[in-house]
Each structure stands twice: as structure tokens, then as C-alpha cells.
Image 1 (spheres, rainbow, N blue to C red):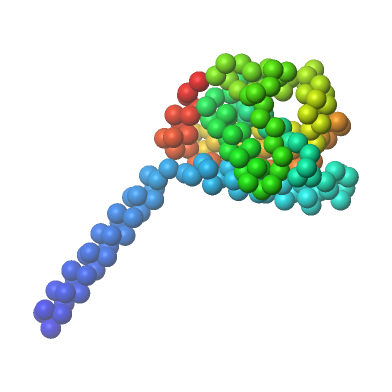
Image 2 (cartoon, one colour):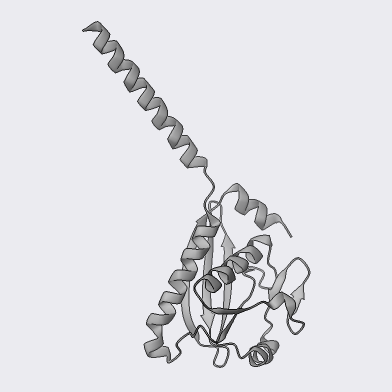
Length: 184
């Protein structure tokens, strides 16, 4: 009987120690920026399809989409490595979903501020979208809080400036995100 209690006690302690270890690991694990970005694109494109009934605009895989760097909501002419990588991941996911995405870094007719990203200045939007016959522009903002980064992504019709789809999400602040936000 004592041996059975001893075995049970050891098993219980081992189990609890394993649980404690997994709780500690999950509390300190880094949020997955890639999965979050891809899910945001999936929702953004899904909402665009749902909204097409009343926007009158249906996104086509054959017409180009332009993706701009995400910008800091408090400094709209500033981005960061975080804002640039989010845009890269959005473009990547759109391509994976079969959309035609224009690579802006190869173009000379947009404003590219070194280490800041691709910004679509309002006076150039009509010209850029006309040159590429773009059906939509993905734009986004982010706001940094103590424990989270809050993001808004939109697909905008460049001909009318009408928002075709919008998606808000948050990303728990982690070490990687903190580093990307401070990197220029």
C-alpha cells in the first residue's frame, strides 16, 4: 500500500512539474507573426468577397493588387521593419491565394524612403494605379501598446477611394515584434 502511494505521489509530482513547465513555456512563447498575417489576409479577402454585393467591386485574380508598407498610426509617414515585414507577408499570402500582386520595390514611380518602406502618396495613387491597372491597394496601420500591437488592414478601390474590405486584429507583443518595431 505504501509503495502504491509512493508511486502515485511520484507520478503526480512528475505530472505537475510537466504542466508547470508547459505553462511557463507558453507564457513566454513568441506570437506567430506569419500565421497572424496570413489569417488577416484570408479574412480581408473573404470580407472583400462578401462585400462585393454592395460595393460592386469583385476582386479578380487577373487584375493587380498593390500592397503598401504598414505605417505607425501616430506617424503616418513612418514605418519600421515591423510595418515592412507585415506588408511583405500580406503580399506573399495574396500570391499564395492566386492574386496578381505588383512588386513595388522594382518601380520608380512610388515614394520609397530608405529603411521606411513604400508609401503611396495621395497625389501619386491615381498615377500608380493607372500605370498598373490596379484593382485594389492594401494599406495598413499599426499602433503599439504595452502588451499588444493593434493593426488595421484595408483594401481600397483606387478609382473611388472606397474601402472594399477592412480587418482589425491584434498581435501580442513579443521580443521579435519589439525588435522589428525598433529596427529601421
